[in-house]
Every structure is written in C-alpha cells, then in structure tokens.
Image 1 (tube, rainbow, N blue to C red):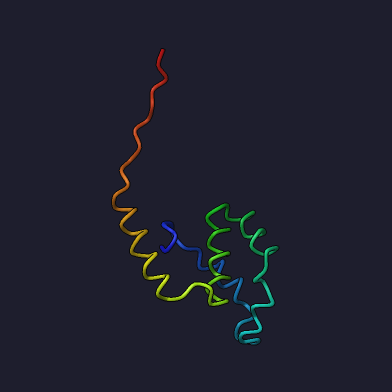
Image 2 (cartoon, one colour):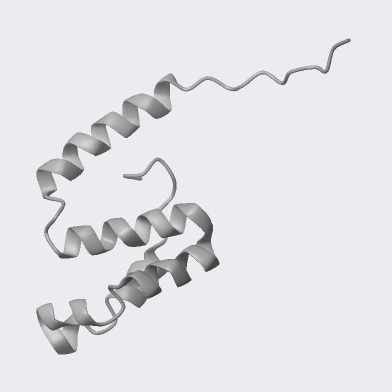
Length: 91
C-alpha cells in the first residue's frame, strides 16, 4: 500500500525469481529498465512505478525509514481524499 494502491506480489516474485540462487547477484537479472518497461506494459503506470521502486529498494536507494515516512504520508493523503464531483456540461 506504499504507493497508495494495492500491491502486486506476483510482480515482486517475478523480479526476485533469481534471488535464492544468486543472492545479491540477482540484481543483474530482471532489475533493469527493460524489465520495468515490460511490467509497465502489463500492469500500467502503477506497475511501472512499483517495479521501479522495487529496484530502488533492492539497490538500497530507498531505506526502511523512507518507506515508513512515505507510508504515513500516503495513508494521510488517502484518508483526506474526497470523492470528486462530476462536472455537468453547461451552456
């Protein structure tokens, strides 16, 4: 729920399929721009962002502290969001 939408666990399983066998070396497999784009094609913008964040976390560009701060911010933002009113086409 970090990004404000439901996560896709299968996306992470796919990206980390080599983790057990390769350890940190798994970052050379499925952790590149081409893979992120392919996931974006399958899952849309949400999936693309989730995959990019996955790579950033695995490369330790995003820390657990960053995650906690962002999780709190997204939670507050989601609670404050009100349903949008539809606009009627007027004369």
